[in-house]
Length: 257
Image (cartoon, rainbow, N blue to C red; front, side, top):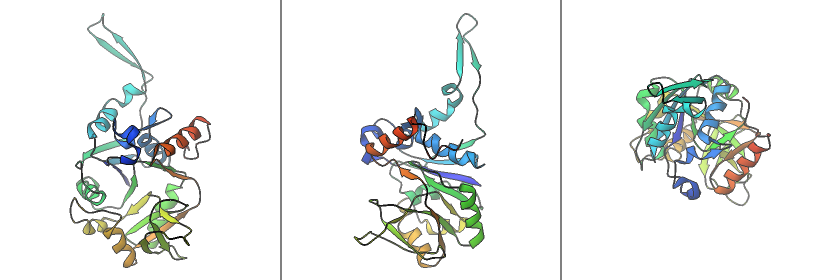
């Protein structure tokens, strides 16, 4: 199953970093958070990635073009016709497709743009700015078990996002803004969708989290995989510092590899 990663936004709420690079390329422990997310999926056996790029997309392409150079020891022998020797060549079992989905394209439009690379098969979908310790194999099994179009990972958290109403069997009932009485259940990403979801993506202005997901919820075609473990997005500089602290402590919950 292919993994689609949304990595094209401007990242305006973490502008201290994103004015220099795409938000998914902001580093935690010296490696882009995009790398951390891909390592999570790869740990569970998902090795084929489609990255929906946009803002400063060339930086993502250049990173993967030189991936083994970034992670290996290199000897440059200028006395022997400028020979380059790569030592302890570091490689991942990955196939990475990077698609320029446009600078101002909305999330639904970005997903729509990569359909030719997905084909008519179910696919994983997540955001390029959040990590967690969800069991992704169990997530896929849950998705295959219920036969609906989509599955999202539901996170219990007191946060600033809109919330979802979920029934006991996991059916997502509605998306709405939070209120004071809510114990927030938010969409933490780490989603799975059938190709039928593309029928709901009209054009590049489509916001995936609005009409498409709301329609799936209203028609009973969206289920929630409830995750009670660790989840953290990197929405602000404060979030980045928290993730960095966890990584440097050697206790990063998302590090399974």
